[in-house]
Image (cartoon, rainbow, N blue to C red; front, side, top):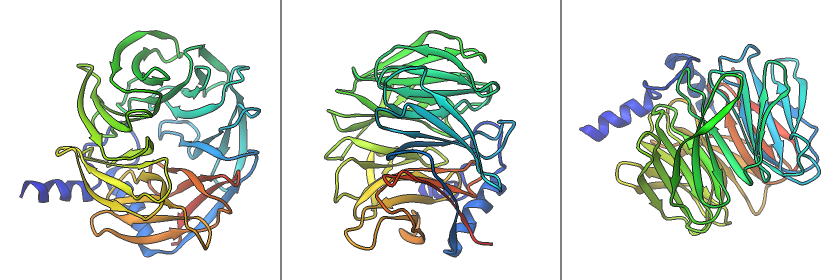
Length: 349
């Protein structure tokens, strides 16, 4: 009975989702529209010169809705491109990585402050989204980043090459104080960070050498769970809306995406046959999985995790798909690829 109630809450889209933004009915309606299977590519965003490494939608609190940030992971292009995806689509800004030569690996918008964080191989850079000027640069070495999703929070997490995760308290101008906590346990690089959308103190991180995903309570700075099952390090991961599940995929060919039960710290089931990246929709039970097919070209499949079946497919990239990002209202999905293009998809009415 308890599991049934938890599943019903999951299907309802995570009633405890944090922060301002689309209502639960709006997010659920956005997610449900994909089930028709009729999907089209609305925009193709060109400008990068190699494969796309990270995508991030602006939060609902941003004065300009529908902004999308994209990064290109190769030396020689240390820029973040900002796109306005409203029709007609408009290229807005190029943000240079503080004059650094470091490759960009992650980008994240603050949920309730005019800040954009970028993690690179040379450190952390913060930009003001009001002026599009650089606010702060910290030479911390290789890092990935994510913001706490709680409304009013300016808490930022960074992961480094030494296997540490640090949580920082910032003000709205981007001034960084001392680290409020240090979370140690990984071996090798910390490659990805992801805060839970409905539990502001739950943070997931991935490590290279230990091939695990760790779940942390940032209040106590203690590890609350270790997910073991990948044969290589997890390259992408994403929380379910309610925070009781997580989906992840490893950086190795011929492996499925794993859906984890975080209470049991065990794999519930798998999705796809040769998954390259994953992203859980902000409402309901849909997960986008990029498939690396031997023939027919790359494809992104939208899976219903409850029924464990594909409800829609996104085809158009010429090469393997990398990052996937859902818009906050679940009405659009952005995908980046090794073909250097960003595509924005939406269900047909």
